[in-house]
Figure: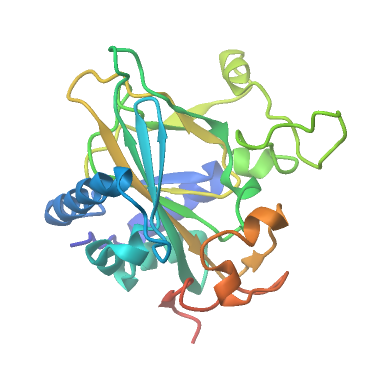
Length: 287
């Protein structure tokens, strides 16, 4: 089901992650499980156009040539069975240096080409920490390829070492600056394309085969071009968020935080550690 890495491999992954803020785990997921998860994603995507029961945590988003699905783990048993496994959490925990690891949520991206042969909607440069309800260094994302990802099919790009150099929280794409010009505490995102072109920043990127995975530091700047729709079609990947030892409930936007799935039901207060059924403990090596 999952590849077991040697201690030497995990040490090399850890060094790369600490230096660059991102590392690729080749062949993490066995083909049979990739097929099962991809089938569950396709089946779930068919629900996007139907009525959504109020008790369901599942949600969908759409853009040109792109669909997102959130919280499959709450409503799709095969996805939950795969994600809440210690074998999946262990390499993440060891690489980021945490003794415990809780699962937070999943976010699936389905990138297709545009309707008329042009590229679909991509993902602009950003880092996740600014939008996260929780804060901490041990708050990694595990991105898992369910189909091929390459230069034509929305492979991820990362600004090398940016987890160490960001001076604060960059404004997220869905958080525009106040119209009256006042400061809201967020930094405007630099022009990373220009910085890369000038040689002042460097991009790390990998082609990924189905079953490959990437661990991303919460402060690492990353993005993806839209899928051109060429060379075999769509790109499907599932991203998962994980909560380590140093993570605390410290939302940037309180009004958005209290609307997030599971927050109110878990009774979290500012500065609290995550707890409860919405943040299950999957790995515990604290003894």
